[in-house]
Image 1 (cartoon, rainbow, N blue to C red):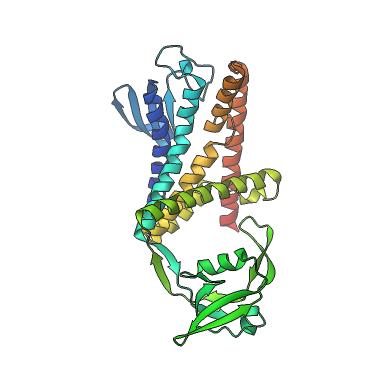
Image 2: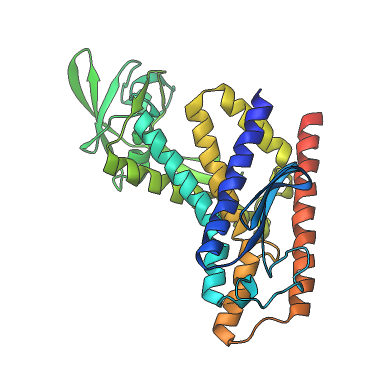
Amino acid sequence: MGFIIALIVLSILIFFHELGHFTAARFFGVKVEVFSIGFGKRLFTKQLGETQWSISAIPLGGYVRMKGQDDSDPTKVSYDEDSYTTKTPIQKIIILFAGPFANFLTAFVLYFAISQMGVPRLLPYIGDVAKDTPAYKAELKKDDKVLSIDNQDIHYWYQIGKSINKSPNEVIRFQISRDSQTITKDIKPKLIEEKNIFGEITTRKIVGISPQFKPTSQKFGIIDGLKYAYDETINASLMIFKGIQKMISGEVGSDKVGGIISIVDVTAKASSNGILALFFLTAFLSVNLGVLNLLPIPALDGGHIMFNLYELITGKKASENIMYYLTIFGWFILISLMLLGVYNDINRILH
């Protein structure tokens, strides 16, 4: 069941991506010949208006084939009025960007839905105090509730670490609730080194406490919910951009690249943990899809945007031969990355 849900999630994200392209193309009067979810043999086809809507056998992507635009052969152009070829560079860029934008919008809507359902949080109760740490020396105890840090109110556990690391003070003032009494403690955090999600060594300040499992949910009003959705979408985008940057620079190894097997596996597991977990992961995957499609690789939306920016700046169209060979090169890069991802997935399973 989890496998089926994972495929449905991927198909929905691909559908919205392609719907973005489709909507923008039709807005500018471009004929859309095919709207396909998946590649390969078409399992289901329905002709609606001028467009053939299809579900194909390999659910690893999708495409919108516009008149005068064919990624499989960039030399196939048409100069009819309803052709993609005849549109201005700005119009083409909008059509191309509409796909990734639809993914960012999908993520935004999902994050907003989460904000209205209630974001899972832990209450700021101390579970354990590690020995020989600043908190231990300050006599913080299990079951203490952190009320404020440097006079900033604390409502949830995640705010504690943020407040400690944002504080410019060498000594931080904690207000603690213990046995219905409010106690003030001045604590000097210590600096530790640890690996972040990219495997890099980073430093952060700690006091040596861990949380109790006292879960709650944080619900937002409409305005705060919109801000939460915007912040989460931006943060997810920046995280993915940073990961790609570090992979290109060699700071993160190629063994970290995951493929479709990892995506399906993680999505299936998230679906078994409830609707919120599935929404979180789906939103992140949607942002991922949007960011990756904006990479300046020929055959991706970002590559086509670069061609059109070149035309916009120089007033000259890129050579069809150059576009053809760059697109072939782009497909080589994409297929290589897909194969690397599948190899890493299989390697993880075997080990």
